[in-house]
Length: 196
Image (cartoon, rainbow, N blue to C red):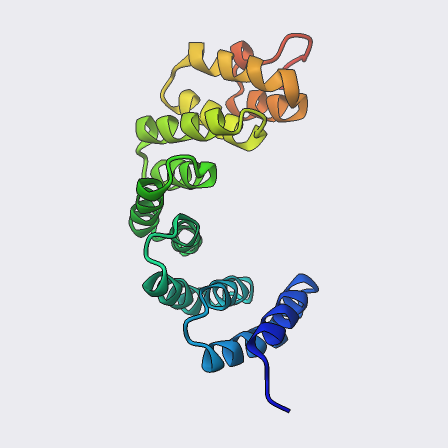
């Protein structure tokens, strides 16, 4: 029976979904042998390798996918994400910025950029990136939390209070986490006692 790349790809997706990653990787390698131009197989194989802790192979797969589709903002984000996992923040920043050159509305690239910049101590730039992520997804508690942490690091108590108040309107638990993390009575949402 001749192997069908379409069928193998979809079986690999199921294997990955059920955390049978070695089997998923095997099927995806076979898909790429049969169809080296499959961007989605290269991308999924990158995720599978990342899940298995094989980050160098994940980077290689995302780079292979980008050779086939160099303007794909999602693939660029994925590459940045893997670089960030490897603590290669400069490469992560470059990949996230490249993704944003292709799509300014990819909120997770703004978020990833903020995390990478923060990891390098570039807090003013990270606050700007988190602000963009939060504006694109106004109900994303993690983006607002990180924005609040950036303002805390920058000693912008006024902005921290604004972020916490906004966060408290839709995610009181995350607002409480932010207040605790900053241990700032100004950032404690109304009606929530700061714990010491």
